[in-house]
Image 1 (spheres, rainbow, N blue to C red):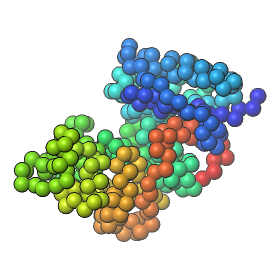
Image 2 (cartoon, rainbow, N blue to C red):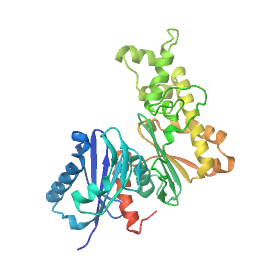
Image 3 (cartoon, rainbow, N blue to C red):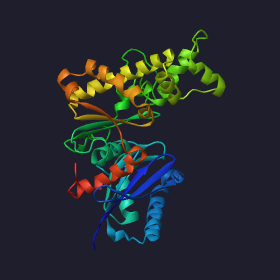
Image 4 (tube, rainbow, N blue to C red):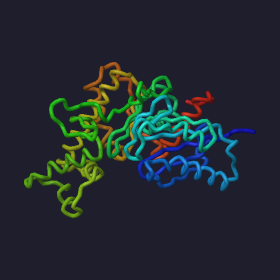
Length: 326
């Protein structure tokens, strides 16, 4: 029987995204289900399997038409098989590959969720046609994925690509969720932007559109910071400049080490577009080895929330040596 399909799965703390993909990464069908975190996360894989078979029945497809399932999971993944720790779903040393294969009956390939998002952008997104790419996801935190010669760099314990936990402030710095201080994530993220804004608004003498927004809503968002910066608010522009400077420092180091063809930036903060990207170039050029900065493109991600499921499919296609168009 012809096997034209791949199942891609992207596990999140609140939702599981699923997609039926063609073997060249095209989206056939996508849907999502709520993540069942009860029973220590033991219900998640059966839930995914049940949803997959239900969708197959709805679309008049059979399991035999799929070459495999790829899945991105939060946390480090060892040997494309075991999730060592995924706090938000309750997994510790969880044999995800084994469980998924048993539940669905297809070859299974597992990766870190941020790495899968990077692979998706490489396959059919902003980095299509490239082989050496670094992807950053600037959301509530900072995720990352490193791809060298078309392959995801995972490291010996699955911890490679934790770009958000690069130390960029050597002395002091805000306490990070990882337990360190001065991580890139504490500055160049949604929560970092909010923290920097609130620190400035503590001074009653500071006049800013951000203060008006805070007084109206009792809160300030990262979007507010970048929107106000785009409108010329001096306090917001100062915050964005600080974010971009540290982000440029981190990216500059990555360029010097990996000499990538492109840095692809996604996540909520990437919606700021030119307000984020334009000033970023000067700092990357300042901090990177000159020869690498000159040749590295800085691009906005294209796939949005679909990057993870598409990249999970890439794990399958890559394994089966599909004629992947780059």
